[in-house]
Image (cartoon, rainbow, N blue to C red):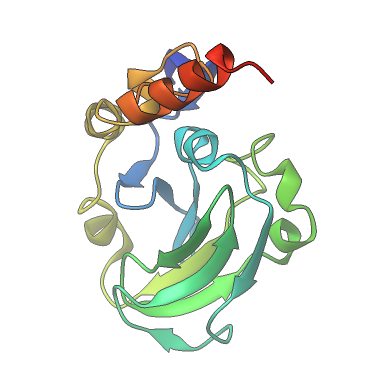
Length: 169
């Protein structure tokens, strides 16, 4: 298990037994039938948590790589694309308790499973390993603002927060 001790003010885990789709911060792991995908802890921290979600395709239908499969409301609105082609199945448990996503993001709180067109192990190895995923996070707000300070590290945000503090009301 890899850890980042200070990532936007939080300690986050990155299991080394998974692969990562860095575009959306998804983890991927074989479950015996296909590949299960879920949101990694760093992704959830950067998003501000998971507030709500909805499926954009019907369960059990074939999907294409890059097709949007989930509409999520986090701190922003997010469309989550399928990293691979195959038959998609969703986790009904995550839809019922999205606020708990961060508590068990690497267990029961997976988002969807895809039965890929190719061999599972070969498909999995197209994704980043834990070390490569951590490297991809180094340019994010999580690393740039390890303490999780309000206003972040953006010059514009700092100017706005400083300006607000200096105002007399």
